[in-house]
Amino acid sequence: MIYLDAAATAPPRREVLEAMWPYLTTGFGNPSSSHSVGESAAVALEAARETTAGVLGCRPGEIIFTSGGTEADNLAVKGLALAGLDRLGNGAGDRAGTAAPFSAGNGTAAHIVSTAVEHPAVQESLDYLQRRHGFRVTLLPVDGTGRVDPGEAAAALSPETVLCSVMHANNEVGTVQPVQEIAAACRAAGVPFHIDAVQAGGWLNLDVSLLGVDALSLSGHKLGTPKGIGVLYLRGAPALEPVMHGGGQERGRRSGTENVAGAVGMATALALAAAERDDAARHAEALRNRLIDTVLGEVPGALLTGHRTERLPGHASFCFPGTSGEAVLLELERSGVLCSSGSACAAGSDEPSAVLTAMGVDRETAQTAVRFTFTSALREDEVDRAAHAVAAAVAAVGGLAVVRPGG
Ligand code: PLP
Image (cartoon, rainbow, N blue to C red; front, top):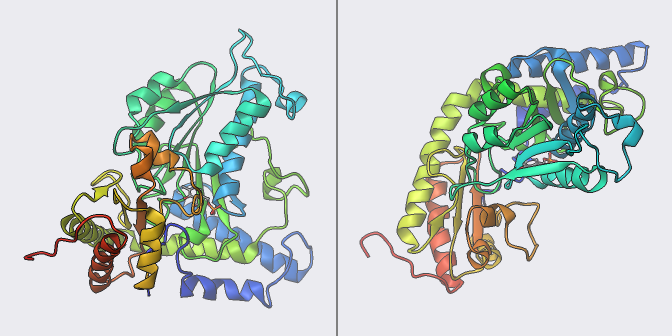
């Protein structure tokens, strides 16, 4: 089997599981308990927070552990936007839960800037804020490669803007956004800037000062932890409306008994990714380019989706006009290649990808999307086998003719 679906979930890493094991067994305590078993769990949790902060170049107190990327995105988007209403002279606490539009004193609704290609964790949070709380949302368009124009982002910011949220790298097409330029525009306008770095986490530099961001979401299971752990970085101590209410853990920002083993796994996975980043990215980029070139060479009419170079190292995505993406997937699975059509979340949906349609891909072609994502453990011979399997699968599904080099 060749596993090319790491963007859905990456294989757990042995080092991560080994680091977690003590906190799943003898060190099982609740960090809030005052006895020794609880205290040693609290020590492990704080050590994990320090390691995570070290990778992100921030202070440990700026790290909030969550249950995953979805929760980190929800907390960033809803928490910062609702708290931002106070900046505009509205009481979030007074009105949360009502559908009454907030207004910025001059009758203009509080405003959020984001993009047309966000993951549903951000997209649906924005929809909720718009529907239930009357926020005005500007979704920036993207070009044919899936990139936002930082000039358009800057122009969209207004005195009523309480948040800008842009994904670092796209899950479906791998395109990396110009987040540093957008961060500079947000800083100049005094607007908090959040990035969803869930897909970027294993590949790109996460130094928050370098990136210039105020908030950043990560998910462990994209980095080699088991599912159920994520991180939200928040610069300084900004006002934040919690999403989870309860016992006041994580300094009152995310209630719920902490997932100590998960936090230890997350810290271990992030430290490994940071240490390996340059070599891993170089290796994966070479494999990605080989996969792209072979598929484009062997499957005439195949379209690469996303940016050719400003894309994640372990990400290659295509449309195969004249086929069905789902049928190609099934055919590939028969030959031992596991991948997905666009995003794992949208699998099984009849709707074409909103990301691809935002990039200008027509609905019919968008239904033919297939995504190949991998870790740096992939080998060159596996790439070649997968690429040839793709060509054969597309031909079998009745799409385009296969052209073998020299034949
Ligand atoms: N954001 C992006 C860009 C993602 O790709 C994903 C998952 O695929 C998420 C958020 C959600 O993360 P999780 O699966 O940890 O909830």
